[in-house]
Image (tube, rainbow, N blue to C red; front, side, top):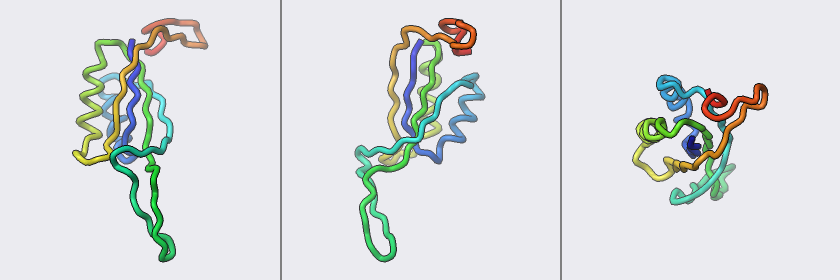
Length: 113
């Protein structure tokens, strides 16, 4: 099993969620995040005063899946969330040693379905 951690623009989430459901990925965890990278932030204006916003809002998605689903999910995230501009986000792929459903004790793939 693998875990995909994807950092995406918040406005892309609804479309991505719908696309993930359409290929059978229904389980995911979403966390509000703020970060900076090459995008560096942006300038804001409040009551005539300019200020720097260095941490921009993002969403972090955690999705655990079978190894054979990883390429499909990665390609879907890239196609759905890519705008060809700085700040589109990142995808991290990590190995998952074990998954256990607390309620039933099911392990492995049975626990993520």
